[in-house]
Amino acid sequence: MDFAANPPGTWLLQHVPWHEAEHEIGAANADAEVAAALTIPPHSACLVVDRRTWRSGEPVTSVRLWFPATSQKFVARFTPAGARR
Image (cartoon, rainbow, N blue to C red; front, side):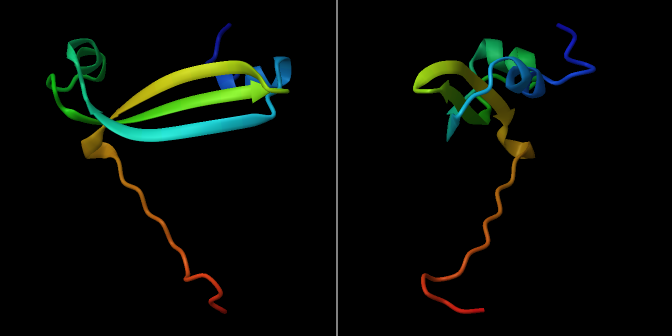
């Protein structure tokens, strides 16, 4: 499949729609293989996302995504429980 024209997520939803997804976000140091793939020094800090999907309780996908920590940023905006705007 050529994913340049149709991204993997879109293709999957058209062929095997999933009903539930989970992202687990953590951190780890890159081993030699990951470091080479990301062109970063070995043992560099990375953001790691484990993504899993299910359809009717049956697993559909499982993937681990690695990102160099220096290029990541999370922002959250929230209000206290019961606060009015």
